[in-house]
Image 1 (cartoon, rainbow, N blue to C red):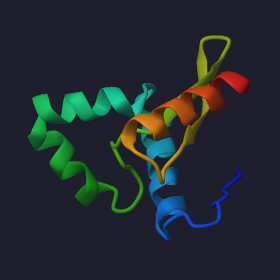
Image 2 (cartoon, rainbow, N blue to C red; image 1 turned 120 degrees about the vertical axis):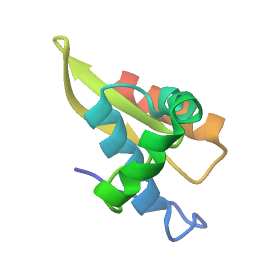
Image 3 (cartoon, rainbow, N blue to C red; image 1 turned 60 degrees about the vertical axis):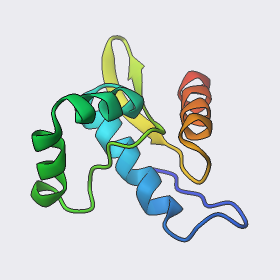
Length: 96
């Protein structure tokens, strides 16, 4: 596991990025899709933080990493706009 925070990034960036990565790995999909699912099924997604406090963040910027059809990890990015975080996570996952 690697965690890095750039100069000038918010103090909570590492925690939110980790939560995005955990969500992407566990649900095996980009967190950008989860944002849409949260709008469609708010009861489940609003209950999730109470079940696994501080562990899962369904916010744009998480991307699962797959190999051989299996999810083997994930990347979570934060500190930018949702779209910037998504693009960084997409590029990071592709680089792996």
